[in-house]
Length: 323
Image (cartoon, rainbow, N blue to C red; front, side, top):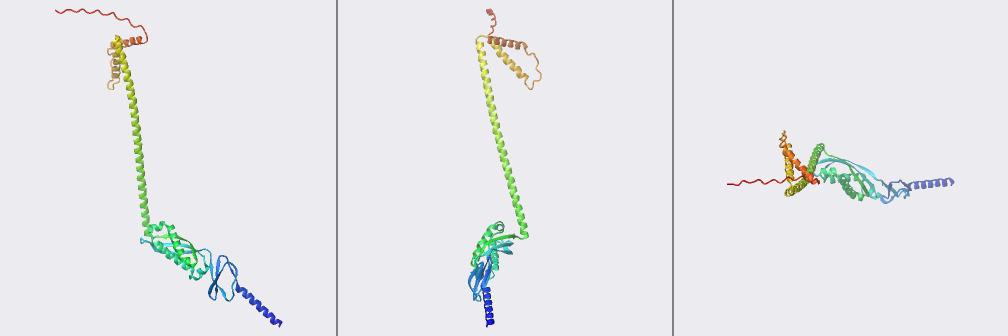
């Protein structure tokens, strides 16, 4: 009896241990487990220690809930302008609903990969080559929008899709190189022409400014010359007036001063003439000395000296009557 009771207790303990081992499930961090009862999904187990009903419930799928990286292999794409390019990339996705990811699609990673490759051909095939090479951000955004919308029913969130490499054919690369060189030569020619145009404009503006300044200087010089001539004419007119007044007063020396002044000016002009190399003197030196003497007499009278004795009046010459 005692031996049979001991055996029964051992059997019960073994059953309990086996039951607990079948009932206790530990879910690691970053994973979700689906529970199936008689083959039908019932609930989802989250990270931690949980219990299920042994022999009735079982673990269906173990889903990785962390963000995953999915390399996209290289494939050929025909653009809208009939250019053949090879494209590869990488996709990032994360399972948000373990039940949908387990039961809504078979082979989740393969489904996401094929969806990404299909959308790459669709999006890039609707674009021209130049736009394709220069607008990668736009391509990535369009791919992300379409793929995320398609995979949302699978309980998957597509976080990023990046195009890694776009490889046109070799002949197309050479054509693009020639086109780029021609474009750069065109820009260089435009910049050179623009520089020459700007230089010509600046040169013309400088010449204009120089002409304006020269005209301003000539105007100022003409104004100064006219002013000098006006003053000289005023002085000449004043001198002529004084001489006329002296002549009217009966002063003969004033006439001598006027004649001597013009005579000396004539000699000065004759001496400064470029064609005159030799000047023979005296040229009627007596008249010059007489004129200078007249000038001296006028100076004495101007500075208050006593006037020279007037010459005695000449007797009138008798006239012989005609017969």
